[in-house]
Length: 285
Ligand code: ADP
Ligand code: MG
Image 1 (cartoon, rainbow, N blue to C red):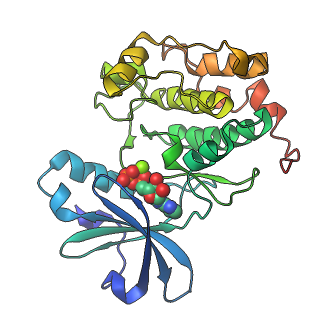
Image 2 (image 1 turned 135 degrees about the vertical axis):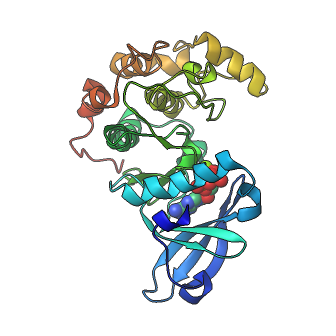
């Protein structure tokens, strides 16, 4: 399978000076590194071959992450530089996104103003629209997989982690269950879905950005999933009183239980609430 991916020549150690760990995932880790030839900082995601080699589904997922990232070219999608393979590992070299996870930004700021939330959401939707237009479904959109270039309110956002993404055929439904409890769409749980599952996750993210809490919650994954299956969520209470009806309307269009009637990425980027803030109004408040 490795003949159709673009590979760097020789050993990764000849080209990169490895530095501290940036993150840890299910199948490996992400490290900061310096590209020796240019002095540029990059992020390298390393995966142990042993963890995927005997698992056909996992290997395919990894190959598809490389294939999809290699073709993707969008300001809000992490850039893949190159790919290395050695005896024990695969290495994906991507740009280093310095500002940390949107997850940590939310924790730090608790609740975001509508303006800042719209700024991040508009960038996320732009990446999702690009993916869907190119028949790519991400399937694991969540604040841990959204990185910021700086820690400023007007930071540029980048979608990472295409490890569960896939190329889909229009009009043909997907059946594999991927995702994370808080963000997974109900139709994904039923294993019959299309790219609209990403919009559901965007709706969950927007909800969290505006009120600091997830719309579907519980003590454990099973409890959360039970709430997702019902699809019922509330936008009542004091934290919601101060939020505009336009923001709430967009959330309810994204968290539409029926993927058929759920707002699409192309409609969402043109949404009234999103557009109100995308004229590059000052975000440095
Ligand atoms: P996994 O599939 O294991 O979740 P990710 O690709 O999401 O792997 O990477 C895990 C974590 O590593 C991310 O949540 C992020 O904190 C960090 N990370 C990944 N890629 C980068 C990058 N390009 N720049 C900076 N940090 C990164
Ligand atoms: Mg991840």
